[in-house]
Length: 66
Image 1 (cartoon, rainbow, N blue to C red):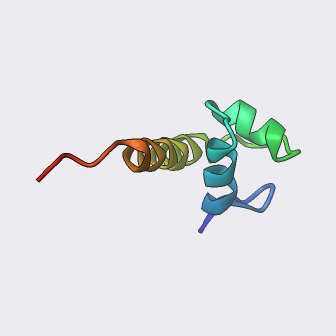
Image 2 (image 1 turned 180 degrees about the vertical axis):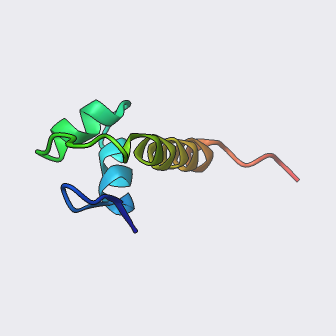
Image 3 (image 1 turned 90 degrees about the vertical axis):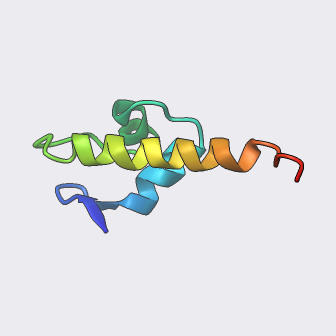
């Protein structure tokens, strides 16, 4: 889904930025070679990035013994 209409950035773009180490929306834009325009996407981008970090953390956690 499109997160930033101004720059044509999708949730996959922000997920990739988070996976590459971006911890803020500003860092994500910089890593994607773009700058925020109107700012309406910031809260959605922040949420997408938080979800990506959570997914990464859960994958890295060892499974509990059954």
